[in-house]
Each structure stands twice: as structure tokens, then as C-alpha cells.
Length: 355
Image (cartoon, rainbow, N blue to C red; front, side):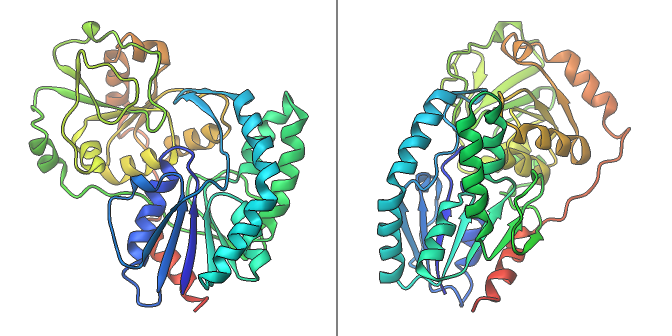
């Protein structure tokens, strides 16, 4: 099988989970080639003769000023331009797929690759926990453009041969065939004890990892002088983060830092939730702007995680002690549900059906 795998460039969650799937698929004999198409290919930290990398944008996502705020004006401008470019993109990618004898397209989570598959005459599989039509429809309340676009995208998703739906999912379109699969996410390579030792974490210090992904904390300066001596903030790869009062360790594999931390402070996103679930690290979460997936991720936090809400003002002023006391007191009082895991194996089994 020669697989065309498109991964949305919105944030790091799509590429981190699909990177796991790709790594797993490369070990299968039935996979001849994987043509990875994304604007996030630099995130992939492994090489393989079967893996072909192409930097290309086949969806817009949402334009963000930082991890916590959304730029709807820029988002609309980019969407309008993308719709104008669709015809030429469709022609180019159809030609590419035919020349490279692509036999199936898998998309996380754009609808446009489904249209390419339809044009080429090959099967397509959607993978994700939300579709862009559902996300954009939330903005039709202020601009009818997003409602019209959502109707169009919903039709595009409907042409998928099947959908593999991840945990923490939003309502989905009417796919022809739909299967709920297990959690996909990066797992730590070290135990919590070994990870803490590797990063030099001390037993009498509470380490809070600030995880704000691709968009960072631009424009926000944390008042680290307010922190008590027993709390240390940690960050790695956070755009716009200050140096004063924050520990920035050397990191070769981010999930090991997640498991080393006592708590992760973040805006909810699929990628970091999956990594915290596997690391068994409690979550302090804050708002992320008007992004409707947030409601469903908070629902997942209530069901599956030790977690507590903390507003942005308290994060900026570094007022963590009260919420840490609360989460410690509540931990264990309400039993948490267990998730089905190893979604990578589910993907392998479904792809085998097309060989």
C-alpha cells in the first residue's frame, strides 16, 4: 500500500498523534510508502526509507495570536484565499497521487484530501476527534460566511470511505462508516522516578510544567517572584516565554518531561491531554478562547483526569497554591473512568482491510 497521509498544521496535537501512527505503520510489511503531507513535518524526529515528506497546506484551521486567543479576521481571510486555490490544488494533488500510485488517503483532520481521493478514485479515511465544519459553525453566530462554509465542508467529509474517531471527540458529520478507536498519543519512555532523576527534579519541590504548544504565551509575563520556594515553573518550547524564574531543561523527548512534572498547566488540547493520560500527570487547565472543542475536552478532563480549572489571571500572577490544595484534596474522591488505548493498532487493522 502506498499511503498519502495528510496532517493538519493546526497546533501540535494532530502531528504528535499521527506521527505515532506513522511510526507504527512503517514497521508493517503491507506499507510500501507513506507520503506525509503537512506544514508540521519538522515535528517528525525520525527517518525511514518508506517515508516521503512534503510541506503543503491542505486546510486552514484557526489563526491564533497565541495559545489563548483566536484571530477570526485573519482566519476568514485565509479561508477565502484557500477556497480560491482549491481548484489548482485539487489538480496538482490528483496528478501527484496518480503519478505516485497512491492507493489510499488518510487525513487528520482536513476534508479536502477526501475530495482528492474522490477525484483520484481511491478510498479515503478520516481520523480525528473533530471536523472543521463543526468548529467553524460555532462562528456563524457572528458571520454567516462560516455557516455556508461549514455546510460545504460537511458535504466533503461525507464522501470519506470511513471515519476513525478518537476519544475526546466532538459531534461528527454523517460518515458512511464510523468506528470509535482507542487513544493515540505519545507515551513516556521513562518511569516517573527515572524521569525526575533525569531532569534533576528535587523531591521537596513541586514542578508545574507550562505547556502551551505551538502558539505559546506571547504578550504575557508571569509574576514568578510571587511563587513560594517549594513551587518551580518549568517550560520547554513555549514561544514568548520569559527566562526569569522558569526552569528550561534540556529535553530530547517531551513526554518524559510531562511524566516528570507534578502538574501540567495548559490550555486543553488533544495532544497534551493524551500525553498527560499516559504519564498519569494531573492537569491545571485554563481557557483557550472561543474554540468549541474546548467544551468537549473539559468534559473529558472531568471523566478521565485528575484536573482543576485555573483562570489566566492567576496563572500570570503565579497564584497556584490554592488550586494545588484543591486538586490534591479532590484526587481520589471521584473515581475516574479508563480510556481504551492503543488506537495505533486500531488504525493498522482498518488499513489492512484495504490491502
